[in-house]
Image (cartoon, rainbow, N blue to C red; front, side, top):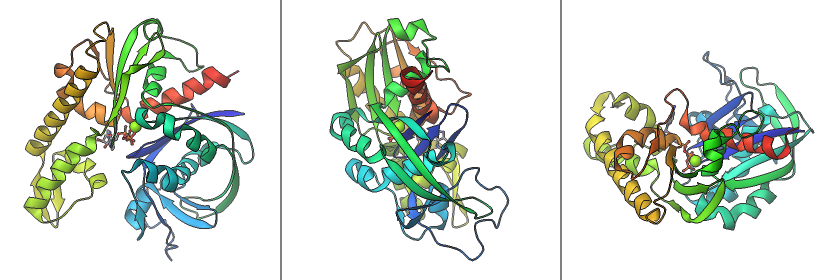
Length: 337
Ligand SMILES: Nc1ncnc2c1ncn2[C@@H]1O[C@H](COP(=O)(O)OP(=O)(O)OP(=O)(O)O)[C@@H](O)[C@H]1O
Ligand SMILES: [Mg+2]
């Protein structure tokens, strides 16, 4: 029995077995069996991005983004669950699974869909899933049964909380997170989730989802670019340009610094308003944690606007992984030896 964590976000799918992890864009596409295979260039992905599930040959992640003609990407919660989550989850888990061996899985859902989709997500994943994995580079095929014996679904931001609270064997390591009242702000690609852990207990009153994901800022940046360049850049293709400060479109370079600063600043003040209103009665919060990939990007703008002690975001870690690492630690806490 192995414990795994999987965080299937609107932007990125992440999975870990505690030793290794992988992360890829949450995009699914039709596989095209190119005559050159997938190995024209060096720098193969470490983990498979081509799978055959229920007779359907699919690409996921960057391979789907660059190679698939029919591509699926959505910001709709129900469509995401019914059309993409299983494929993304199986692709995420496949490298960490020995065929037929039972695994126990912790996954998450946004606060607002937690009650509504919890059972559906469990049913979707808790099963024996036969898949064919096409290995990167060689194209060699391997039949695998991904046997998900048990699933536990938790509210997404609790992943980040457990990551701070528990150690690598799933035991409490930081007393602070066990005994204090902690507010968590998880800013993802589409969603921003706010929650309070009061001595590890979930506070319903202090918890809420909103649509203030980083994609709000990305949309503003894409609109400005459309006006200047005439090209409608897909949101999931903007990250590199935004972090570099400029983007090249049809040979011409466009500066993104000013527009990014403005868009991030605006989104941060919208989030601060939502949070400060939501937690108005929770003035006894001990500390606030900003997490998620979008959280890392917004933290410099958001921190000065929040009412309370904000714990610094560690700069050396990829904040997109905070939830999934915590899911795995929670799994170890539940089922670990
Ligand atoms: N190395 C990186 N590559 C790409 N994006 C990054 C990176 N580091 C931080 N980010 C930011 O992280 C964001 C995605 O964050 P995250 O993975 O937490 O979202 P998600 O969980 O997929 O979305 P949601 O929670 O809404 O479902 C990106 O949109 C980008 O702003
Ligand atoms: Mg997320």
